[in-house]
Image (cartoon, one colour):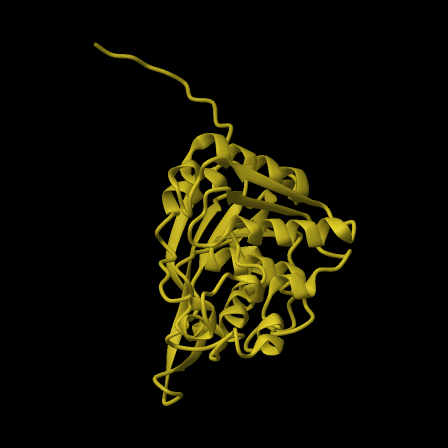
Length: 286
């Protein structure tokens, strides 16, 4: 049996470029250098400029894998975005702010290479989970104000929309049983000091500290049964943004725990896609 069909071309081909080096940073106690890499999903379509969404993996600032969620990120890309998943140094390699400078370096790199990947430089979003949600919030709230170091500093690291998942937003509000236990926390490892004993320094690394009315639109997603990053952390960030009149929505996933299965359902990803389309817009003809 034969069948002949004529397929109407309505969408571009999307390609994945894995392991793109976007920066070099100090390694092994400053004696060596290593590459930071990203994975990029982009449309083979030079006739349009596409909004870009930068994804930041979680892992308590201790572990991360930029390729872990490419299956889901490809769905976001095929909805009309360039999507890039960026690597950053973990807390066993470096303390804050190096994680944030790495993310910002990735955003600047994408702007610098915008012609190659058909990116609209004026329409960037950022999204991440847990530690990555924290970095997404920090990148969105700080804009070009600080922590832009390294290459391509002539380009902006500012983003126009943010979607942090279950982000630690005020580490001084975590319910540590004692300062001794706080010393071993992931937040203390990030700061390089005990957050319970150095609260003035700890608050300076918190997203809530940098909330202003000029913040880009936020969609915060948090499960109300989170046993790792308390749900109140998402509420704190939402309430701070709402109090200054920023564009913010807290999407509460009923019964969901940290990195739970509801975060990987089509229903939620359609919400995410709708958010970025509403705030960043569609691909525009060149």
